[in-house]
Image (cartoon, rainbow over all chains, first blue to last red):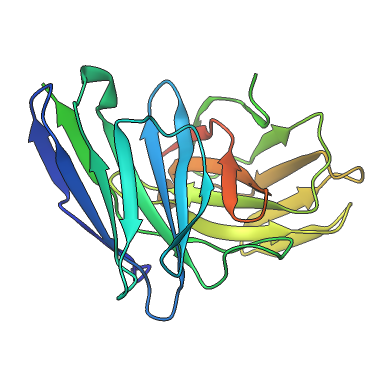
Length: 116
Length: 110
């Protein structure tokens, strides 16, 4: 158990819909990262928040957005869903956000999104 | 083009065999990490290598960082079914985010 929790575990929805994925970081971690894992693209970085502020962005679609709340939990919002958005979505957390050579991130169990 | 190229992509072996998986790049990195991911779970950090030529051991797993810090290898001795999983190498880019290789899917049959 990494200490990072994600809900829901599974999500099945239809094209055009909007969903929200939730992540609670490990106690004491200020940084939250979102990743998408699909068979063809592998594990891809989406976005990072540090203590409530957006810190870095990857190839995140405009239909996707995220935020980190004062209690440090984070939500990833996916809208106008397409079949290709079906994937595993992971949240990770770490104590620091940047500025060191390596950064240990702890991953949650993921949310499996299926868009029909 | 992938920043990190992992090989082989798939590996199926019998219990007790040895194996090596590779993570290669044309770029130089200050550090490199190896993760293991089991089905239905998130990746779990196994090791971070920092110094060129560094060798780290974790029980039956041996990790090596290339002298030029462009590549790394993971060697498993006497593989066990519990070693089955997806092995990912990753580098820390632009501060916080991790860039992953495509992974090596390892299956160890009893």
